[in-house]
Length: 559
Image (tube, rainbow, N blue to C red):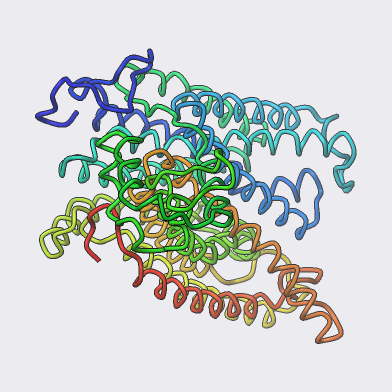
């Protein structure tokens, strides 16, 4: 817990029994440490299956490569998109504490279904026959029940950890920044266990054991999370943020100007409708930006239900200002989707031996994971203190600067991916189509794109989580933080759509097969697809810079 904290009630927070949370007793880094441990466990349970699922679907459910890749992409996209539901429920009706517990149970049930299907032969299709009917229904029921649980966890766990720190103090700001940095470290730690130990078990001992390990891990995460209950401070839900947003937008569009309702009355509404602590959140003065929304508070509403306070209007302004940043990160997530699909398939055609050890292609994410685990402590304990002294910002490097670094790395990553695929296909042409076994080229070449994209993910995801949490109004923090995961979801869906569009466009223009179709990966024009992704990522970076240079922080950061 933070030093010097007094045992006084924290406004808007309660303990696990519903009593007012006390400053000296609840919250702080000790409470957040339970969240960090749980993050290791839940990400291991999720990523162990997601990173290798394409292999399971192709090898045991007998899906085609394209259908396997699409299924994995849609599964991961759905899981991350459902984080918005978890964040919404945390803000509106339940605490993030309760949403985590409910979601962990849902993920556990989904993994039980997948484990049972992997264990019992009669629930899997015969060799050479694609899963259909009841067998496919069992598979997708397990997958999407798991996705529902994962989404709820993603939408509640990080905000719950962030809420353990007192943002009214400089030490609280710094501690919260450290928490989000180590949240990414723990996410990577869980990923390391997933892509090494669990993936090895799946490939060598059987998928029922891999699913079983994930099932047991997510089950054990529940008592670990509960162990921190006496220390947690839980934000009290304040009603639906979506209702507030919709009300302000409708009021601004439909309200008529009123001379008798002045800006002064709106300010009085602001002071009366929110605690003093929350009223300090917004550094934006009424009427300064997005002026058309001011009509919601200053105009005459068509109906009493559309009556809005100035505080609600300013909250919605903040949310709308976050959206261009959110949209600018979707392209990076589209690039990341390739690591779970085409990059795994590339590695599967290459020599994956390291001495006497054969590395499963799904274990390739070990390279960015290890890099992230090494970089996070260096960043938090060396780079950030130096940057704080140089910039005067509590976070050292601002959130948007970190996001921008990640987007720039994604451009480099896709250029590297295109060059590596060109080299791999050159080797494939040299040995000929009749060559059996892995190509005489080491899989370490593919590791470069994993390294660059993993680094991009580190900077962008860590920056996004803290950016949305610190910039969003207190009543909308969980939902806003969930945008970080929703960006990944939209990127995965965009990847699926982009593959379809590119295939359709290139097949019609060439009169034959598209870039991403053919009997084997060696017949794909994957390098062209990667170059297209590189160009789109560069355009997206330019779009981000346009919006980021115009964004004004409301949490006290310097530009």
